[in-house]
Picture 1 (cartoon, helix red, strand yellow):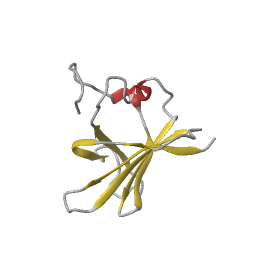
Picture 2 (tube, rainbow, N blue to C red):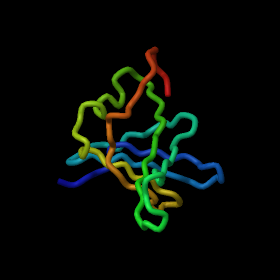
Picture 3 (cartoon, rainbow, N blue to C red):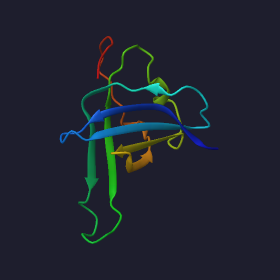
Length: 116
């Protein structure tokens, strides 16, 4: 099937550049929902410890901090296949990252909403 945008949100990076995160779901055909980000909306991580210095493709991941405003918001991320969602990071409308939404690292505080 096709991956279509289900969630989208914009933020500014430390340099004031407009950035956007799109979370696309396989086979989705509904309304695009707005994402509200918390502090440090996106953290980019490069795993270069075990990779040759001149390797052209390096393992990269991003961590997204979302503001959850009601109890069941984003619960579908925890109950899916690892290839059901694709996350795309755009900087100045140029795609800078694209990867699967891996749900094994999702954490939430044990308190009432709203929280990040």
